[in-house]
Each structure stands twice: as C-alpha cells, then as structure tokens.
Image 1 (cartoon, rainbow, N blue to C red):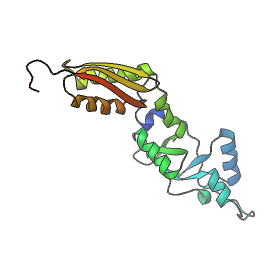
Image 2 (spheres, rainbow, N blue to C red):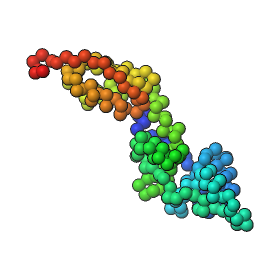
Image 3 (tube, rainbow, N blue to C red):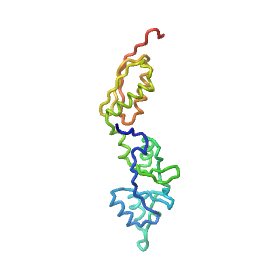
Image 4 (tube, one colour):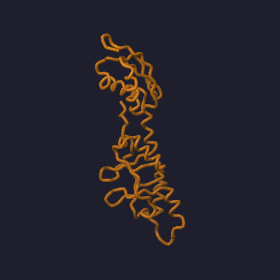
Length: 205
C-alpha cells in the first residue's frame, strides 16, 4: 500500500545540492546547470540556511558586477530565506510557495538546519495517489472513527480522485461530517454525496 502523503517530509527530496557563502558566481552557475535546478540554498558553516540564490538573483544582482573580483553566493543570495519545516502540511508549503512565487523551498529541522528541498512538483505527488488507496483510507476512517457502531451504511467509490459517497445514514447532519472528513484525505480532488436518511425505529425525529 502506498504511504499516505500528508506532510512535507513525505514528499521532499532528501538529497540536497547546496553551496556556501563563499562559492563563486561561475561555480554557482555550473552547479545549477549540472543538476538542472533553478535555485540553491546557501548554508552557513553550521549547516543552517543563510539564504537562497536563484537564477533571478544571478541575472539581477550579477549584472554590472565588478569583474575584477569574485562575486560570491553570500553577496548574491536572497535573505532571509523562506523555509518550511519537515512536518509542515502539504497545503501549508503550497501556500508559502504561492505567496512568495517560489518554485522550491528549503526544508529545515527545528534548529534551522537543512534536511531537504521540496518543489512544486513534489507537492503535487499528493494528487497522484491511486483511487484504491484513497478509498481504502476513507473506508477505514468511516468505520473506525465516524461510524464504529455500524449505525449507517456508507459506500465509497473513488474515480480520478473524486470521492462518491452513497448509502443510508440515520441523521442528515452526518452528510456534512462525512464530506469534510473525505476532503481531508490526501489525494482527494472533490467529494459528491447521495444519501437516504432513515431514522432508526424508536428514535425521536
């Protein structure tokens, strides 16, 4: 069964290419070209993220630089760097990227040390879960947490990330609860419902 993708640590790239503050401009360009990446975290001697140098930084800040001396990552980088914790939610990381118009984010631990990188493509992995995995997780949630007493009959069908919930429920308000829970499952694109409401005998209406 595919691992449930919930937080940044689940989708990030643990193998990270970085540079130090003293790395020369030409070496930064060569590293980006070799690894086909558009930005690099700049690390302090303690392994903490001091800043990020991107292709945009190279184009904007290196233009007109004094060619008689070496321009370094420490001069070119954008600081402070926008980073994300490894236990941050996928949605939270996506919000940071959208707000800063960023394609990649350094992932740090509680001491601000670099532990990985996450890209827009990495975050989109959450939407590539097989329909069967989504359905299995949702059925488990419904049976163990929402309706453990079997008071409702809920059928789950998932097609291309869209969850279809049908069946019989004892209370109309349960429809909204089921919908909200379904939307929290990683990989779910949308939720549709079609329930009959049947109040158990002996229960007041």
